Amino acid sequence: MQAVGRRLSAVYGRGFSTSNLYKMVEFAKRYPDQEIVYALRQQLSWTHFRMLIYIDEPLKRDFYTELCRLERWSTRTLEKKIAGMLYERTAISRRGDLVVRQALEEVRASDKLSPDLVFRDPYVLDFLGLPETFRESDLEAAILQEMESFLLELGDGFAFVARQKRMQIGPDDFHLDLLFFHRRLRCLVAIELKLGRFDARDKGQMELYLRWLDRYERQPDEQAPLGLILCAQGSDEQVELLELSDGTIRVARYLTELPDRHLLERKLVESVALARAQVAAGGEE
Image (cartoon, rainbow, N blue to C red; front, side, top):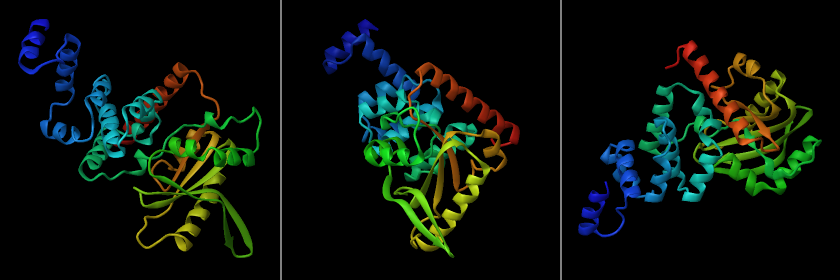
């Protein structure tokens, strides 16, 4: 390899050290399709690719590659997304390989995101600086104070619309905690904050909010509103029985303190493996 590097350097100049040549060989293995490489090189640098080639799982690597291209991440942002286990926290990782592949191909072909590529679980809100015990109003106030950081954790494309959105339904007034708009999904996103564990009754409340938003707030060129119920604790069995992973309502946990990375990694890997096993048992490819 050293001899090859010397010969290449003599013809093309610097940049062909042994370590760089190994990276180039690995790059050729990871990205064999020249047409895809040509398209990617317009937006991703060699530094981006040097990070991406170390991701062994092909679908996971494609996920970071396409989102990095689509959302124009810097190399520092890409590094943070990988370190923060964005793929494992994104809903798409819990789908079957065929579904993941199709979703990423759609991103590549049309820059179109599905909700599975937008919503995450859990959301890490350690930047809020909340005390050990707090109320829902404290959580909401902290999010509003740290809105920039909250938007970064939600992901690219979210725009803040309102807090405590008032909805008058008959003689009753209801208030939605937070309302956002997602530019790529072209829809309103309603977010409800819950201190405790997810309760099936939370679904009914969110359905009411979404139907009101669909009737009174949705614009002609927009898609149907989506809902995100953020809870301190999930309830996987209730979510599964209610079939919320495929509908307009998503349930996710939030973490106000960042746990040990190895513990978080183990829990996420176990969660993804369990979800995929359930998908396989249900017959989704």
